[in-house]
Image: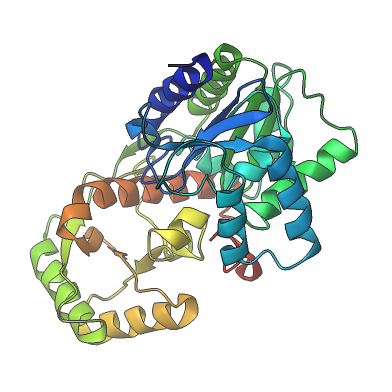
Length: 362
């Protein structure tokens, strides 16, 4: 196995097996080979499952940069992006997924690039005061670039290229980017340094997060009744053959064990919530059938997505998902409740702007 591929797999396994850093097909890593090519995670694959024969693609860096130029001069529709990314591949896979949608910014940066969506960082990235707080805790050890969320893929690459063109980046040293409402990018000349920088940032941010405690719910437990009611109404609104099951998600943690307020659930806070999580958690003040139906239909009209999670005061969080996905989604929604709690405590929740919620890459 060539060294660059071995390094790529090493990074992928180091960070891709913990859902607190990436989950489902999220996150991406790349290593440049020195011959004008780059190895990068394949789209829709999981970092933790990458091997020497699957989960990655090899692309021509110069062709990726030319494709980015062409897309920015015209309409970067998803179909053109997909076809373009498949054409820049230079590996020997007969049938394989396209390279990551984020291939473009990887091509612009250093030899090793790591992009994660750490739940440790999301409270900062989804808070109104997150940028200031990150500068306070990371300075003087690290400086970073803050990228406001405008979209994924081509859009993020354009934002980073603007920094390069303004000579605000020295690609021979470590470069750190925080993507508002989204994640972390670390670009370094070596794999060893990139891993070290990522771990150090995560450790500092973890230590400075508002501590959480177990959320104690009502003694009068109605979770079975409420889950059954949500399930019944959901099937009436959506599809009786949906194969979804509704269950309570516990344990739950919030800052100081405080009970959630309705404001915690305003808006969508990350692209992942929109792509995988049904556009956030729905607040159910009164879990009666009529109220549940109204909440589900209102959510659908606003987002064009059926909700997958509901919070009922004093009763907790309920997740509605296909049986095979329930163990993962129950954990992820519980994490997202904690993230919203910490973001509120850090200075207020900062949802995604609606005008960026339907763009390329989402």
